[in-house]
Length: 120
Image (spheres, helix red, strand yellow):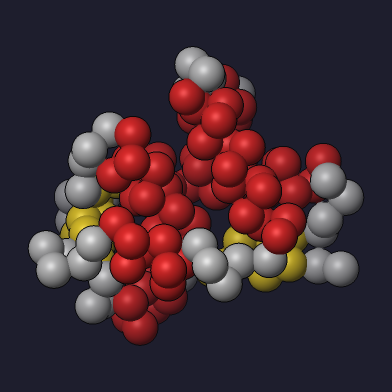
């Protein structure tokens, strides 16, 4: 079965990773793209066809959670939003396959693989 994943979901999950591990409340658009590519590759390896849906308009419905600064290519968590709020909104509804792919991506990063290691 094919999975369609919005870039806003990948951005939120990359942001969750940064908050949990780097204590940073932002993520670059470049790193979101790399994170998305790795998750997509992991899904493909699981036999799960997938497409990441890109588009600036995809962020419009999520302005209460984060601010997208396209000029500086940064996505920043809104001050009032907690890590748990992001988890509840952007992790809990994920399918099992997408959740596992995100967790595996983050374990690889923690183990020392960078975004570049996976995408080169």
